[in-house]
Length: 321
Length: 237
Image 1 (cartoon, rainbow over the protein chains, first blue to last red):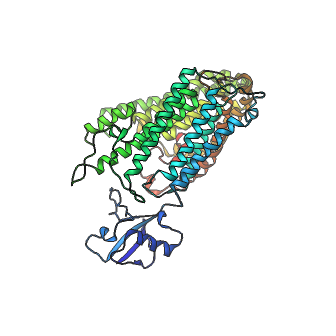
Image 2: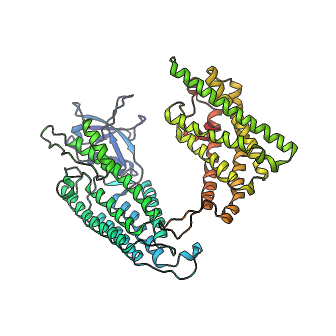
Image 3: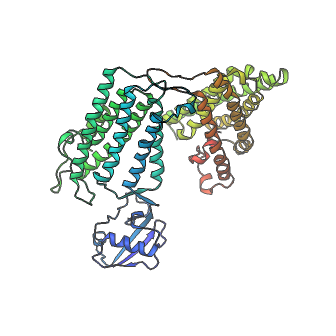
């Protein structure tokens, strides 16, 4: 079949179009485009079906696994696709590695090296046990994240725009330095021993629970594929994104033990970001698993274990979202 | 637009704009009088009450945007008002040592002329439906001179106040404390200087360029507040 590849403004990206077998998949089309354009490797391409001008609908994105026939409606020998360049792409594992490496290196710098003299604090520094445990907790956390990135997680999309590297690294590295500065400060005031134990206890339990959640999520996806399944088992029976819940509570534990405004600010920001993700995922799963056409119906669950989530979820189920 | 609620809206906005106009007019008169009679060191003392009042009244504009009384996006008005309040309360009112500086006069006069033109423009628009084109022209032409003088005065005053921030430790939180938190007002000034420098260039070039070569489709619309973020400083000017 002949495939015409046009930009959103109507200009032909590939002059004369492409000739492909009728049984070709979208992935084959992407390869063919890449061969002709050199610059646009497949993960940079966003291919959609053309929309009627003025239509307010969201364009249908071609999925790389599907056959081209799935997208031609009747006229099996001609297909027009709209091309968008997503810009340079980076694989998720690479993105996550650089995000997490920063905190893993920056935090120990504040603990081990005499940096505070550059902030005007001369002299010896007294190190409290809680500061040492915080170092272990922090570094273990980010080490675990890097390990999970390479050995546990299965990603739904292969790549992310390059600009996200700068944005995400700025977020993690800046907060890492901000928290490390205060927890390791020469004038740091520790909390009571009991509070420290409660905090780190919560953190440890949640780290382990979080790891188990990741294993359960991994087992939902066959190797090499994206796609969505209904998560089941353990905390997933109560909460859609139990992995985010355990992550948030782990940071809460860290903050209970270390008690810094910087840490709590980070907790608020991280929790709001993760709650947004949890909401999106919950909605997506509810939409995919609507109980029709033999698909299972998504069970009633909280989407993440915080009060805000509880209220919103009940409101959305009342409105039959 | 018929309906009593829109009439009330126009009456309220007309009153608001003319009231604040009167405030700034008063500031200008007091400032000029102080310069003529006592010298530039006494400008702040002479104008401080109406200045603090008129500038703080601008907070209402954020409210207007939030409840939909006016169409300007708060993403445009909020930074502008925040920076004005920062200079007025956070620098001038907080650090008496800078109140006698020459830049206070240039600041006050720049702000006064800007606001007088701006509030009379919107006051006229709300009262009679549209503003005369010469007033619109005046608004965008005055911008060319007053934005630089205003920014230079603001930056200069922030910079002048910085040693006094360090010395007095005002608005600072020191360690040790149980929340292991510290805050240094001095660094807010450093960040403010950095933030000021960047949008200034963008706003002047893009904002003025848009007005000089307007899209003919756009000028036929009823003049709304400007939507484009690149003309944000212009819109609030």
